[in-house]
Image 1 (cartoon, rainbow, N blue to C red):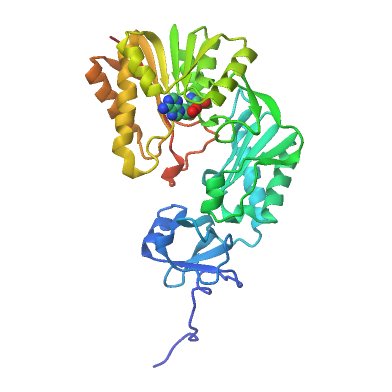
Image 2 (tube, protein in one colour; image 1 turned 90 degrees about the horizontal axis):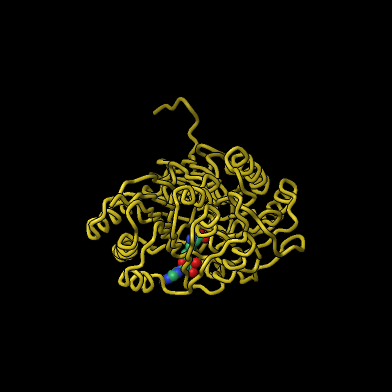
Length: 409
Ligand code: SAH
């Protein structure tokens, strides 16, 4: 047998891209197909070998035949073992992080208006898996959610780039203890990473809010709803009920448009901030600490009436498994709300569960409308604000639904 080229056995390190000693993770067919379809995650069950790969490494990903598929971040403990960062070789991850932060800032410049609070970096949606950075006026609040983002010199690169570009008064880290546990990272306290300022006032659509690095859920506020606050306020009128109001954002926006607002939440600390926010905006709002399900049941049974109702519950479907229960929860809320809306009223109904699709939510409201004998017109089908990018090939980046209805009769 003759060969017309030298016979060199190629290993997976050599095909496609030189790995230069970079740790390599080999993935199976299902994972490979996922990546080829444009997704950025590979689950642990699709990893064939990750021998000797240290937690939080920047890795080369190869298929079973040794073909290089791209560079990724490796987690030794998360179910999402591999998070892609590039289709080519990454030699200097901290430099790539800095570049991606600059890109994230540039992307938002033409898109974010009427606010000094917005999400600057949103993890996979900005090709920076495990890094979230929110701006609250002159304070940046960040979360680090993956092993690879938690190491030096990556952390310094993040801090330095943010300081240079944004010149914040301070940078705070918000630690999610259960995520650090899942990622097998040592426990750490939330606190300041740079600067000394711990609280500030920020504004969205002309409405002002208190921010304190130690308070609240998420990094402080639900910035993904920012554009929906303005939309809801545009349609809102008369007596308005803001259900699951948290620190009062929908309610404060509606009050600024002249509505008489009642806000409901089960969290007292959230309502205390809501009350301070009302004072800041010279709005008079009634805040009620209650379980929303009980309150809506009582109010609808006693014949309370509203012109505008906002429903913005927490994610009921944390996984696909409890989708049915979640849909029943959404149905109950929407049914009770529809019973209380006057003709000509406005229903703003939201779901931040990734597993509940827009179609699911429309069906839930349709079901509720049938049961309540109400006729509804869809005014708007909305999603998350543009500073929470929806990456077309990564469906998990699209999660928030906000539907606005006119109740005809
Ligand atoms: N609309 C808010 C965000 C709501 S987040 C905004 O735009 O800022 C969900 C809120 O629901 C949280 O504030 C939480 O405290 C509250 N919550 C959760 N379960 C509840 C219940 N059963 N009854 C009332 N509030 C509840």
